[in-house]
Image (cartoon, rainbow, N blue to C red):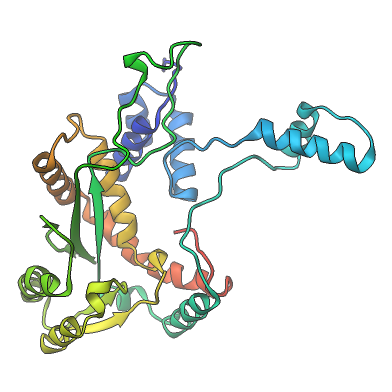
Length: 322
């Protein structure tokens, strides 16, 4: 029988990672000694919100505010528990808002126009697109909501603390690309930033030429509007190599499915039995986990482009749940 215990964010990430490796929920629940229903709810929540961390809202403060407002408006006193009960009965719960990039009217207009132009694209059309992007990974965890069980007065005991630098001392910029039935090698930017010239020398020329030899002469490159992509030298290099560009509107990470892959890669690295302790071990962990990502996972996120584009139109270029 499964034991009943608290599941922290680290274990949640490991559970999600196992399921994304096409493991059955039953097998994952048995491996972690957790009830099948708990794992199933965690997986459903992840598919809905895209987050594996536990969300905790300020329920007590919010319900007390509602009670005070009701008192001021009607002159009647009600308890905080009554407010919470009524809200739950109406399907309302305290939740933290999803963090999204800011969108101006120009951003929404450009996103909507882009999606209308590609609304008729099929999965076969998107299968010809190479989705690429950069991402940064650090040794320190990016989870600020990791909770522990502790007794009163034990907050500063060593075993109850989590040491973390205010400013991470080690972080790495990586670059990669995904495509149906294929992927590019994970490139690590060892030192400095990714400038336009470094992008040409380290990414475009070696990686794209090798990749074209495997998939043919023509494929489409999606530009996520990073600074290094907008330089004239990069554009000239793309044109000279015969690379067709599919320019993505600004502030649109939800239109690039490789963003979902970066999230999965981060959880896989965090879920390793031996966490990275320095730059070399972090590089090795990122490379190993990138190579181990199931190709079916990459294919699925690319195929989701049809649904992503469809979601944008009724929302007039607003945020979509991807």
